[in-house]
Length: 159
Length: 194
Image 1 (cartoon, chains in turn brown, orange):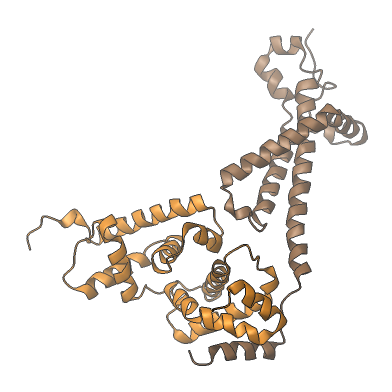
Image 2: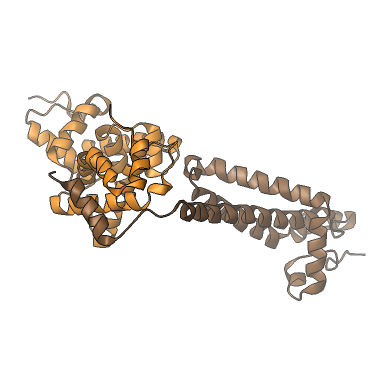
């Protein structure tokens, strides 16, 4: 096409546009990375609390298990925290997809990696009793948490 | 010796007139690509092409020199064309007959296509069959068989994993084969008299 390149350059001048600065793109990418990292951290916290509530909760006593194993286990699974964990893991994956090379990884592999990293980090947090700390803080400083979680304070062990 | 795309990008960032080198280098390729995606009104195609280059210019600092510039500019052209379809709420028009013929030539053996005596009829049928495919299948067949892009390049243009590119090409060819079967253009009809 005759003079198309000149036409494009003339249009660029007419509109007064210029290349966006490099920091604009660095900032945009850093937002996605920050959101992804925060999501992984939040998911790890959720997992550490879920881990504590399920495994360390005194409600999982031998009597409760023998009386009604399935009911006992179901009562103790912290569904709320697992849902929160799932939401943050999904958020981490979606933010990773928006990064420069995130699209190159198959969804199943990326999601699996996010879940493994989040669980791993959660397990590390639990080594420092982080899950327990958050659990008891919410139990004693909020009114809604007790209703959402079947903690050892709630479970009635038959005599 | 031709200056590389990467060097031309650096020059264009300093002097906007150097950007015309990139426009000259890619205008015909991208115009054909935009038309293959379904824009046959030449004026509309040129508008989309111009918007593509303007967007490329605005985002020059986002170009990562470790990636192929061709894939990057194709991605912008692809996205601009899709945005046009969404704005117009249009479906793309059928593939051009010469492109239908090119697909026939390339996929003849894979899909066991019957040799039509009338080349125009053959290419028109292929074009109609392509039109019946999902847009993502059509896009990937165009990039693979007309633009002759590698799987990695298609991955960068469509922003999907390389493995998914391979899967989608396979599915697209199968879908095209199914449509052609329904259109009676495969070896289902081998053995018929005449």
